[in-house]
Image 1 (tube, rainbow, N blue to C red):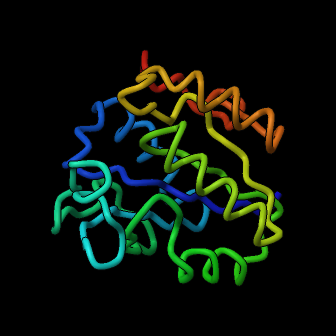
Image 2 (tube, one colour):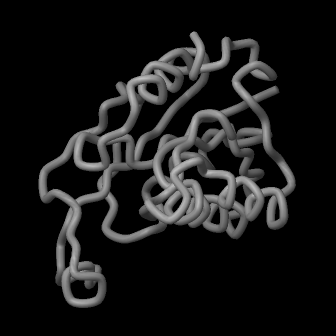
Length: 161
């Protein structure tokens, strides 16, 4: 199966657990990959004005993906979607930070672009509302159906490996 990997916002400012970074790292090199990093630009996305919080202005991805794209806001930038569409994958595996917000937004963007978003449920961490990510997994299943685990991809459970 032709697959691609989309890694959402695994960057120092969001303090990802080491098991998440290492688990996603095991997928690098097995398929084409692209990572997003959230950076702050108030003129693009009103984080400070609306939420009273801002992401770092200069974070870099902690994952050595084939490509890294900067984003401002919840969804992936247009160049990320264009890159993935050029690959013509049968499915796009999605993992990363904030299962119930940014990861879910990526799922909607992929779906709307005609791609098949597939969540790697044990390679995500939820937002401060639900750090377990279970809310996001349930929403993903409801909207997109396709959810897999590391074990189903032939990898060890990232939390115990």
